[in-house]
Length: 326
Image (cartoon, rainbow, N blue to C red; front, side, top):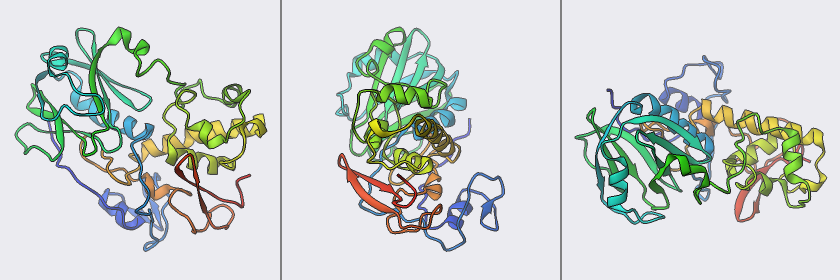
């Protein structure tokens, strides 16, 4: 098994980002067609005051990066250095439920990574605000804030590090997962066939709040966090403060499509790395290069030429274009 060293990538401009990620630029467009880049020297600015936690695309990227290396591996050891996460770890229970078990599949539900184990248990991981789950060589030095580590039969170490300790690691019976308190109230998955304009209109019936808050309500739709809600609303030309009671079916259909396109593009580009996110091999994402409005206050909207604005909604930075979002 090959273990890749951790790389922390700071995105300075589009050309530098492409070079760091091994992409070749031709007239500002990556040769594989994945990134529509600005000319060299055009900054991709993300203000220091912004904070972003891993959202659905980041967890899906993590799942896809780890799956080929973990499926069929066996957990042979567990080391807990600090049990004081969001929910305190029970060393004995976690060890009893994971040690000696083979990994059979990796799944995702909302922002939870689900690692199914033989014997009917599932290892559940939530990254919180600053968590990382990376596969490293078993004899590599322990990382700072590495609170939990799973030793694998193949010689690797699955390390969970979390400076802020808002993450979650626990093992639950697989058959009871959907009824567990962490999952029972979750809404629909945005990447499945269940999401449509009609579904959104139905969920909004009887409600009057702002559409951005509606999109971010995990009891209705899971995994559409602050970054991707702003991006999807811009793509659909819908103002983030518009009441859900004043949105037509046509606009709901446009918004459903925009949510799925935005999330799928973010997954294809490795997620968004503003602060801490990296995939299972320590690689940063580069969707921040493609952000239309998020973090771009005062910059020109690529669609209509007006300046992007920032407002605060429910305590979160929200970015939109006053010219083309109605």
